[in-house]
Amino acid sequence: MLNKSNSLILLALISITSSFPMSQAAAPIDWDKRLAKANQQMSIGEVDQAMGMFSAEVKKHPEAGAPHVALGRALKKKGKMSDAKSEFTRSTEVDPGYADAFYELGAMQENDKEWQAAVSSFEQYLQLAPDADRAKSVSERLRNCKEKLE
Image (cartoon, rainbow, N blue to C red):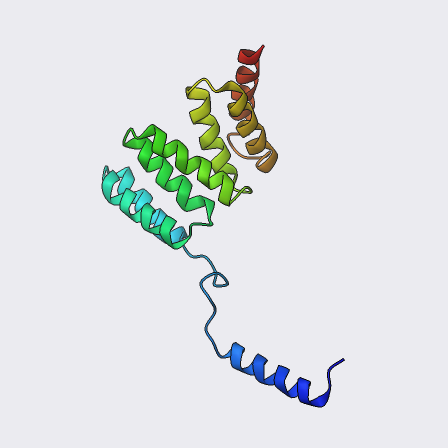
C-alpha cells in the first residue's frame, strides 16, 4: 500500500521518466523505407551498395527478422551462399514469427539437399503464413522434400 510519501515519489518518477524521449527499443521500428530504398538499389544492380544499407539496418535492429532476410538475399545474389544462409538462420532465431525467414532458409536447405531441415522450415513458413501468395508452391516444395526423406 502506498503512503503519501511514496505516492509523491512515484508521481515524481513518472513525471521525470515521461519527459525522456522513447528509447530505441520502445520507438516504432521504421526500417521499411530504408529497406525499400536498398531493395531498389539491388534491383538496378547496385548489390554492394544495397548490402551496405542492409548491414546498417541489421546493426541498428539486430533483433528484427526483416533486415537479416534482406541482407541474406543480397548475399545470396552475390553468391555468398553460406553467409546468406547464416543471415536467414539468424532471422529465424531473433524473430521466429517472421515467415519470410523460414521460406528463404527452407529454400537454401532444399538446395543443399538438407531435406529434413527444409521440411521443418517450410512447415514453419506455412504455419506462419498459410494464406500467403506462395503458400501453394511452398506446399509443393514441402511435399517434394518429404518424398526425398522416404
